[in-house]
Image (cartoon, rainbow, N blue to C red; front, top):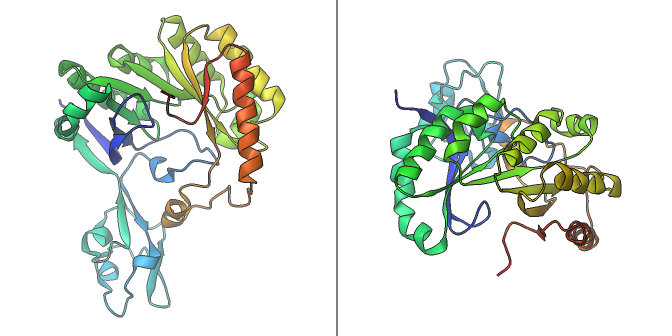
Length: 315
């Protein structure tokens, strides 16, 4: 039976997640709850509505969403839609279907592999000229491993390069479904201390580190990333431990280490889903913080680990 996936975004012409120009599919579902996550709409596996209250044209002028909702789940203030009672909402999306002003957004869409390939083929010429291809990200794409495996096999059949960007917080049996059809692997190392990792992401790091070690043991090259978060993982002890792990356990299989400087991203998405943004109080002096990130990059390079600030290889 052909696989279908739940996808919340498709980006064309992206240059950040793999080489060349790429089509990137973002899949719903993630077992982590990273405090700095910019895609909270990816956390749950099912399709769900989000509210952008500034777009509501008011109950007085419209009111169609309230009439359409079968569960009295919509929340209003001074005549405007401001949120959804998630305890009552069944994600039926009737409010989204009738909203004329895009105040209600649908987070997620079911797509077949054939439908995805139709979108992917639009950019075949760009892949060929730039050395690009297709990237799946999330969320955690391995939560939909059967779909990703079938999609990547379809890409391989048409000589399209594949990249899996994953947390690798997954059972090895799920990874094995996708790995044979994956050309490029991208993953994060968020923290080397499992308790601190769990505090800020909701899960420990043991499974992630073990899976990365297994992948390296299969002679697979990977791009690793560190989201550099102030006062979380940017201290000397953690940076040294990360370098030690990469050199000892991953050997020469890390093609590039990319440092991603913390940015406040996705706050409006949190608001649309009624989820508190946990990084709201974090303030950084951008100039001094960026200098610190550059110093971290210099340390990794001094250890013989090819390290860049950002996601784009310098020409």
